[in-house]
Length: 178
Image (tube, rainbow, N blue to C red; front, side, top):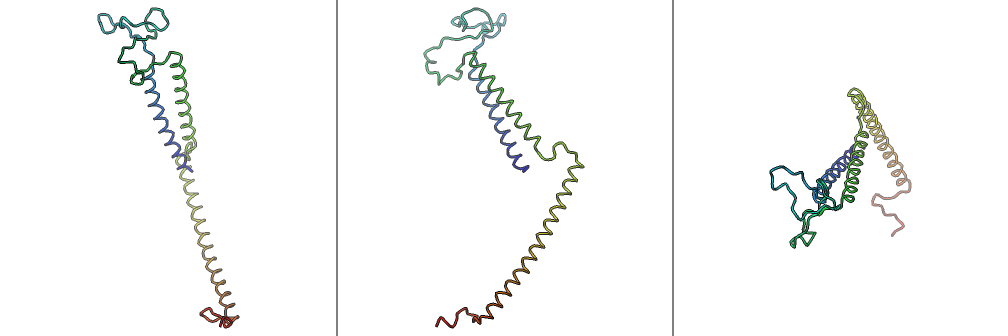
C-alpha cells in the first residue's frame, strides 16, 4: 500500500515540476508588455517613440503595445506573444490555483504515508507485531502443507486399494479390451 502512495507521490511531484515549468514558460511568452521605469541619464530606458498605451492614456507602468515590423508578421515565429491584461490575469489566477491544488494533493498523500504522526518507539512496536504475525502465518502455512501431504498419501492409498480390488494389471489394460 505504501509503495502505491510513494508512486502516486512521485507522479505528483513530476506533475508539479511540469506545472512549474509550464507556468514560467507561459509568463515568459505571454506577459503583457509593461513600460519599464525610466532611469535618469540612460537613453535605453525610454520606450520607443512609436509605443502607444493600450488604454489610450499617458503614464508609466501601463500595458504597452508596440507596432510590429514586417519581420514580425507571423505571430507563430515570435518568441513573445502577449495576451490582453484581463486574459493574462485570468490565466495567471488559473495557473496559481492549479499549483495550489497540486500542493494540497501532495500534502494529502504525505499524510497518508504509514508512520507519519507516530514516534520511533511506536513504529518499532508495529514492526515487531507485524514480524510476529508473519511468523504465525508461516507456521500455519507449514502445518497446512504437512496436512496436505498426509491427505495426498491417504488419497494415494485409497486409489491404489481400489485398483487392487478391481484387479487392474499394472500396465493399465483390462482383460476386456482384447
